Length: 277
Image 1 (cartoon, rainbow, N blue to C red):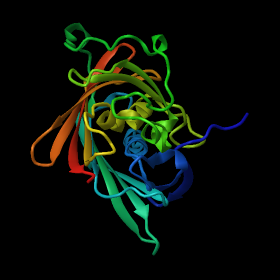
Image 2 (tube, one colour):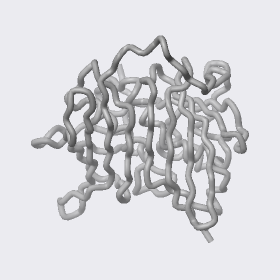
Image 3 (tube, one colour):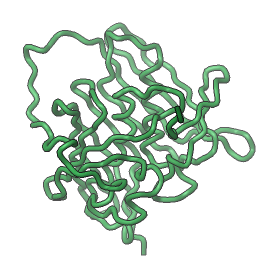
């Protein structure tokens, strides 16, 4: 059997660090020497989730801060528990990129609150309705073609070209609605879990919710914060995203997040907005 392409190739461990080589499938639309935010967020989330795992605990909030350009050279991940606890703990993962001189520069950091679970099914209240129609009822498009300003190379280059996307609604005023799933494993030779797939695609909310043309504006996000009220299940992630632009060169993208059974949480991204001209 031929192994699927992957977003990262594992390079083993040295001490407390895991090492990975990003493949061409992680490339950003903003430049060939950069990774799209999606795969690094997925890799950081993978490290949080697999660090001292306990089935009686779940991550309820994960924030990823992008501290600099995430390059295509070797990446390494270091994970630690910042705040241990039986009920609540805080876990941190850092992603560093190898430089020409052999040193590593920290490029992204993720922190996740992990909480002990309990039985609350009798008081469940989710005011957000499920995302419809279902992905199998929607025609597929190459990459992210047809999602707002995403046309041509912007919709099919690098990472976004590896995604299976289905557009449920294209109205930017109420929020574009898209179903998405990655077609490749996060790490070669591994089974990518549902929640790892979920985190791998969340960064694209920025593009889904955009009201700006890529040819005229840049709107790179400096962070992605995700709040969950339950754990996502299944291949598909639903994203309903909307961009808000302020008068002073920054804005935000807010998104409601779904799986096949309904809403699972929300995300927010801070945007640095600049005119191309």
